[in-house]
Every structure is written in structure tokens, then in C-alpha cells.
Length: 428
Ligand code: ATP
Image (cartoon, rainbow, N blue to C red; front, top):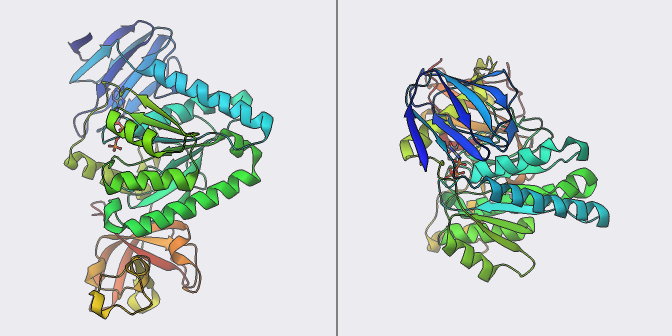
């Protein structure tokens, strides 16, 4: 039931409940979209009639209309098509149910809905989160302030890959951008895969849940709006255990399961009865991304952190610091054989241990997170981070590191946490 057409600079008529899907497939290609008549939205953000929206390489877009509309696409060389089958009605119903829970929480002065979105890779988890957040932010008369929590360290939607984070959503995301990033809450994990240090991952989840619950208790508006939690696509074995840990730590009320009956059944079996588990279909438009594409996505995310986007160009600084002037740590020590392990120490203690790193070539291209802690006497591991730098050069003869940084000068007392994540700065 999808109509496929080859186009270049073309107009589309969409019936109610249809969507136009397209991708920007080539580097240097840009596609410009314009809404000519009617009403339309992209992942929950309404389009403004007559405004040009520009999309760059890697964008995978669906323009959906509840009422019908006409659209113009300029510069599109590959395939784009209109689909009449979308799960948008299910997603809208989810939003309506969450809204009912928010109204109830306002009336009864209790916590609003804590929603977790789960499912395997490439089923549209991030997209569903975005739609639900945009729908609640669009009801501005109600002043909703949901918190978006992204627990997938592989993509780093809120900050850079290797972190998990949360941000309060006050208004719908701009069509071409992610949610505005005022004062995000960011924790350094240091890896893109949860399995590398499960103990640390779970420790950070518990801490983050604690901090967010506290914010909810202090702010009635955030409290009744609730949370939308995005998770990672690893749903089997240990990955499943992470999901149940997240559900417990954040005290979730609703779990939206995309596209996997087995996962749905497991959660129905294992969750307390008051947790509502809902199975939802995935959209046929969700595009599968291979490892190469994911890697490129990570790189693009880090580049954007330092250099901004075409709409918001940033100018990072390059600075040199002496090896002796910088305090760098990593979290988690290499495993030691059981026989050498001190009696009062557990394996899990090692995984959350702060270990000093001696500056040198081992730091080349690595991302370093700037902790909000200033001494190691503080709880550095469970403290949020303020930002990131990237090591772009190591000069062992002069004992100097070159850092790419959003700030002109590093502060002397900063504690840096070294990430496994690397970034090659081709702009330098
Ligand atoms: P991950 O496996 O990384 O957790 P995910 O399940 O969160 O992925 P998304 O990131 O939401 O999946 O979606 C994958 C890609 O598909 C995104 O680039 C998104 O823009 C695109 N996409 C989602 N829905 C549609 C749609 N209806 N039509 C076209 N593209 C879509």
C-alpha cells in the first residue's frame, strides 16, 4: 500500500493519516521541504506553512498529516514515498492516556506518569519518545514540563556518546534539531556499550533516578508531567536485567514495548501488577541502521557538540596543557585475579573505582569529561559532568596535551574523566 515514486523537485498530496517518507542519502546532498497547504508534523513537531526546512545527510524523515496536506520537496534525488499505513493513531492514544494520568496526578498531588520505551534496535524508540514529548509540549496552555531521560550511551542524544542524560522539555523540538539543551543532567559512563561496565551503568542509573525524583518532589509542574525514558536496544539476557533495573530505579508506571511480543510477555510476567505494559507496533518507515551508519552517527554527534550544526555554528578553542597540570582519571580498574584481590574488596568495587591515568599517547583522540567535582574526596563517579574536551595531540617530548574545547581555557582544578570514546578532529 505504499506508492513509490522517483522524484526531483516535486509536489505531494497527502490524504488524512498519511505520511511522506524520505531520506537524505548522500553526503553533501540537502533536501528542502515546504508545507504548501493543510497541516503536517514531523515526529510530533508542527510545520509552519511556507517555511523552508533543510535536511542534511543521514536524515530519515516522515512528514505525517492528521488532516491532509500538500508538500513540496526540493533537491531530493533518491526514493521518497507516501505511506497510508502508520502507527500514529496508537501513538496518539498513548499520549492521550499519559495526559489522563497527568491530570489525575495534578488533582491528587501525586507523581505523574513515568514511562519507559523499550524494544530491540531500529524499531523507532527514540522517535516514539520524541513524538510523545512533542505532543505534551504542544499543549502549552497546560504548561507540561516532562523530563526526557536517554539511557542509551551508544547514541548520546542528550550529550555525547558514552554518556547518559536527562533534559526538561518545555517546548517542541525544532524540526531539524533535537530538544533544546538548557542545563541537561549528564553522567559520564565512558563506553558506548552497557555490557562493558554493567556495575557502573547500574550505579549511574540509580543515582540519576534519585536526582530526578528529588527534582520532581521540588517542582509540581515537572512532577505531574512525568518522565519519558528512552532505553537501548539490547533486550536479551543481561540487557533485559538492565531494563528491569531501570524500571525499578525510576519506579516506572508505564512500559511501552515496540514490536516484540516476547519482550512484552517477559515484562508482563516480571513487573509488579500496577505497572502497565503496552505492546505497540513499529512504523514500517523506521530505517535499519548498520554499524557503519551508527559509528558515523556517533562521530556526527561529537562533531556537533564542538562545532555546532549548520543552523547553529560553534567555534571551539584549542589549548595546550602541561601533563603535570592536568588531573585525569578513569572509572573502573582492569580486573585482578581473585587470589590478588584484597579480602575486603568485591569485583563490583573495582568497576566503580576512580583510577588515575598518567597523561601520554594513550589519551590521543579520547574524549575527556569535565566533572563537577573538584576533589577526589567527593563522589566523583556519581557526580554529573559539565562538558567535554577532546585530546587532539600528545607531545611527549614537551610533555604537553592539546585539547579541543568549547571553553577558551581549562580551569586548573578540573577533574577530567577519560572516556573510551574517541573522535578524530578533521577540522583541526
Ligand atoms: P536504536 O536501535 O538506535 O535504539 P530506535 O529504535 O530508537 O533505534 P529510531 O532512532 O527512533 O530507532 O529510528 C531509526 C531511524 O528511523 C531514525 O533515523 C528515524 O528518523 C527514522 N524513522 C523513524 N520513524 C520513521 C518513519 N515513520 N519514516 C521514516 N523514517 C523514520
